[in-house]
Image 1 (tube, rainbow, N blue to C red):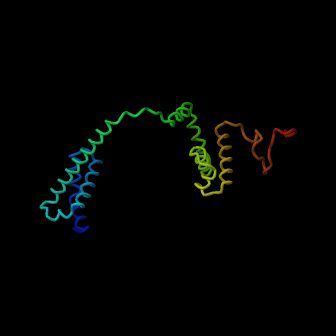
Image 2: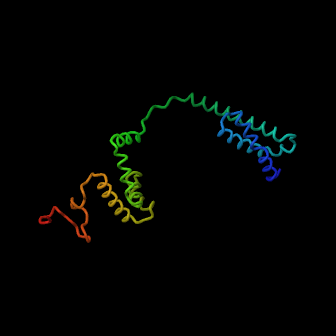
Image 3: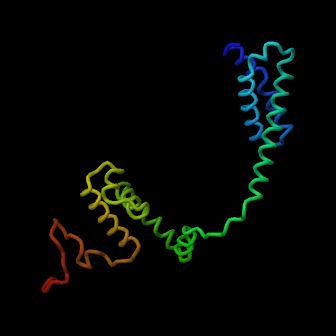
Length: 192
């Protein structure tokens, strides 16, 4: 049997096999799997298909056997899982982080602050701080030199501190460059 004839058989009977599988399983997604497995099995047995009187009836038989086999396999899987000892409960560490951050709205504030960073700065801070990559790994991931990663990371941290209110305005704190690139340092005598 050639590919074209098998494609014709599929076109002629796939919907009927699907309807049969839905009726047998009462599960549309499972019925799609049954149709796939039915035609896979039919392809494997295509040499015997030439001598069949009713291809539709033959395919329904194959589908019924596929359903039986999948039910049997599912039952065996459930029984095997039932024989396993119950797993000990281990709390997910991510839940503790969410609880710590979510309790006072800090997670929402952090996400809002991250959203106000430039795309490049946000990528660097997420890769470095949240994904745990080194400066060199972040550089490789972003396709930029390590020095660029360090400057973006510094800029992102400064902006996040300012956006979160964790640090007073940096110019007033004497940590950011002043106008025209000169440093403004209010801690020096005579600066005011």
